Amino acid sequence: MLSHLLHLEGIESIVLESHTRKYIEERIRAGVLEQGTVDLMVNAGVGERLKREGLEHRGIGLRFSGRACRIDFQELIGRTITVYAQQEVIKDLVAARLAAGGQILFEAEAASLAGLDSPEPRIRYRHSGAEAEISCDFIAGCDGFHGVARAAVPKGALTLYERVYPFAWLGILAAAPPSSEEVTYSNHDRGFALSSMRSHELSRLYLQCDPDEDITNWSDVRVWEELHLRLAAQGARELTEGPVLQKGITPMRSFMIEPMQCGNLFLAGDSAHIVPPTGAKGLNLAAADVRVLALGLTEFYRTGRRDLLSKYSAICLRHAWKVQRFSWWMTSMLHQFPDDSGFDRKRQLAELDYLMSSRAAQQSLAENYVGLDVSLNL
Ligand SMILES: Cc1cc2nc3c(=O)[nH]c(=O)nc-3n(C[C@H](O)[C@H](O)[C@H](O)COP(=O)(O)OP(=O)(O)OC[C@H]3O[C@@H](n4cnc5c(N)ncnc54)[C@H](O)[C@@H]3O)c2cc1C
Image (cartoon, rainbow, N blue to C red; front, side, top):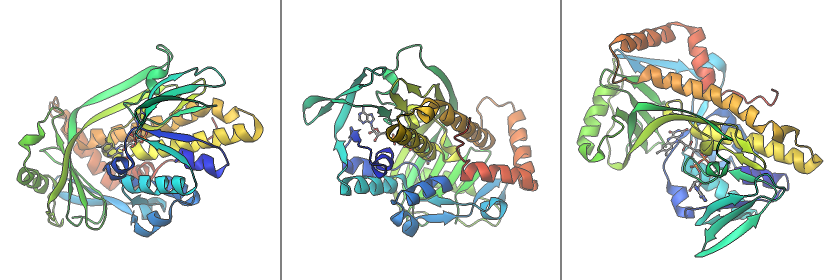
């Protein structure tokens, strides 16, 4: 996305991707796009298929204490979300870059970064069995949580903030039409569950499990049984089962670093922050970061000024902490905590009860879920 946004401003970039094109275009991850992410894709000319195939959702479902409730975003705040799988976003962006003659080096793994404080930072990388180096004006560290960019920042220059949650998500992708019209969250005595979708034919469902759960203990039959139990509610439609195409366990953590820049290196997305997936924010946060970075780099190449670039970290962190707060809040409200004496369980149910009885509380959830605007003014 960053490379595409820069291209639209006539700024050259090279993308290094350690995996193959096929791998990144098939990797199943996020699927909920905030309105701001949809607008970014559409305004950047890569939203054609998204507009055609994306499923616009006007709200989400919530289940607790046997009740099936709904939060109506459209009615509450006049904005919506769109379900469009992350790998489809990737396909559209890769196609747009290659069609415009953009340089994406697949199977090119960045090994080290140097000269971050110099006007010409360098990246050493391996490609086609050989080592090579790129000298550039700026490096964007968009290489995820396990990449090399964050590690290149000198020790002591970063402050880390982290919370690891005492549970994980067991997720399946199933060849079954979605069981609910909208993404549906459930707080159940047996643990959290989520019914979501990637298309009219593909369901994505999740169950709270132990972080060290052995996935071989979860046969498809057991997963479906548990999903039926946790998503049951009065008046709710029965779950539609189908062949399980993929099964995996995702740990849950909140992670932030400050600052998100060091000299001419700018970190964006998962390399700088991880949010628990309950708020469906990881991809959207990455898109918000690179939008700010693209504006800063555009200002620099047009005017030579670094006003926006110098504020990149502060602008993105201000937004990311609000997203982190919301993701933490959704996570805390919907999961069972193993060390709970019973107090938290009662508090959660009171919170959900309050939420469903207060328009103000629903509006707050809606505006955070649909996505807060990033303010460029500090
Ligand atoms: C299993 C799973 C499920 C998820 N579900 C959701 C969800 O439902 N909703 C949601 O919002 N978010 C979800 N996320 C999070 C979301 O996918 C991420 O937040 C998002 O992909 C972040 O984008 P990014 O560009 O920062 O990092 P990534 O998408 O991880 O991209 C980084 C890229 O850098 C490449 N790379 C890494 N190291 C190097 C290197 N040394 N050299 C070259 N290339 C390198 C990687 O191959 C990768 O393609 C999920 C994540 C996972 C793992």
